[in-house]
Length: 328
Image (tube, helix red, strand yellow):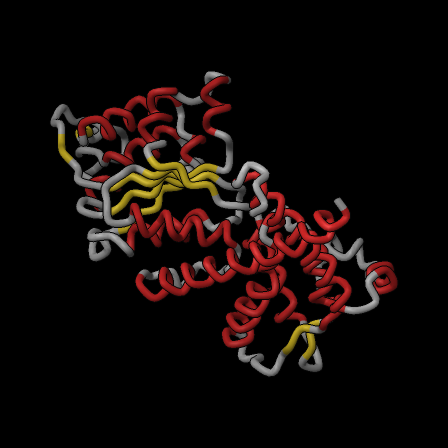
């Protein structure tokens, strides 16, 4: 029994190394063949999504992208479009939560002259403008029930009618929808049409929050540091190890978008060519009190090791769950 207890960690370690090699090989292949240059990350959850994108990009299958705000849903939607046969045609983004219902209907379907006060001429809608390309419906959960019915018709038949018109028109677009809410839960609550949900959810793609892929944080920090030091002509600015340690220990409720905003802020405020903990938002470092962190985690190496250990634990658990507990 003692022999088995000692041997199991070795086998798990060997298995993880083998899997890591597989993920690395797969990532290199995907990034060499497809346009994924704006999607930063090596985590296996991201690579799984890139693999799925490569499989479905050049089809007309409707895709539902789910994930928290700031996880990169639009980047994935653009990757689907620019790796497809529609790449030379328009990619039109529609924020379903940003416009009132009356205006959204006109923007979606267009209107004819005299359809309402102020409609002094015919105006094409986004569906007409995107013909031959891709429509990205961001925050589709914010769409009213009345508009959900009209969207369902387009998904079923490709037909739509401009506001104020009796003429039915055809559109040739690929639909990609995104939401930061659980659409199935909204269906159960009666807030989203079940038939529309199943029309949108032909391919389901879920993006992980940044706290579930913390091993990508150093890579993202490097990416955004380069982006904003070049943009602000401060290419000699570097980030301190203590600042990196604080970022590695943070859970980022705003995900990658929040990290990008933080790095942009830090580069803007940096003096003497160095980003320090004082440049971070107070909400991140305990309202300006980063002394406790430095005392608890005496150096960047310690903080990084803690995050890596937590990642390895979660990764091993995922592997065991996928193999139903079979270590070998």
